Length: 259
Image (cartoon, rainbow, N blue to C red):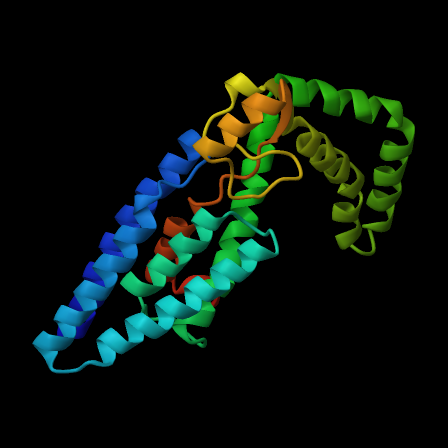
């Protein structure tokens, strides 16, 4: 019982900190750099104290092992340009502060990573759809692209609807061309050309590092360029608190299947 209280406290604290980081990311497109430091330092301190109180240093060792695994994986994903360095360090911080949650079937570290992918996929899809809906230029561009080959697109979906009388899956296949065009339009709409003087910390240049620009890098650009093209992306940090909630209250993807 006392072990579960330790776990619950670390979960609540980790959720609140990552929720703040996620909201900050949504507002600024950047990860507040002190957040990973707070997660890691408090996580190590907390589980060290818990180990002293309980006489069981497996708690502290587990924090080190899971945190190191999450951080190494996060930095690897950063190196292959899956996400920014801020997301990598937040993932590591989660491992240090919340190195265990009860999950069915899979070990917690593997389960957490798996569910980050599931939640991240759903979140990214909703984010992209929402981004396109609220952006008038993207809506206009999407309608314009569809009009160029209107008969082909609707002919394809009509054929898939007919086939779906036998194979329902084909109805979804018929939507693929619209989804593809919409995704390409949104991707293009997330790029914009701005004056170098309008750059701010955290902005990502098209073709540049995902971690975003630092203040000194912006100052260097001001000396050599007048305009740059910046890339807006899915603001991903909110996925972490959502995954924590999903795991704790539903047991993740596999736990949901058991309900």
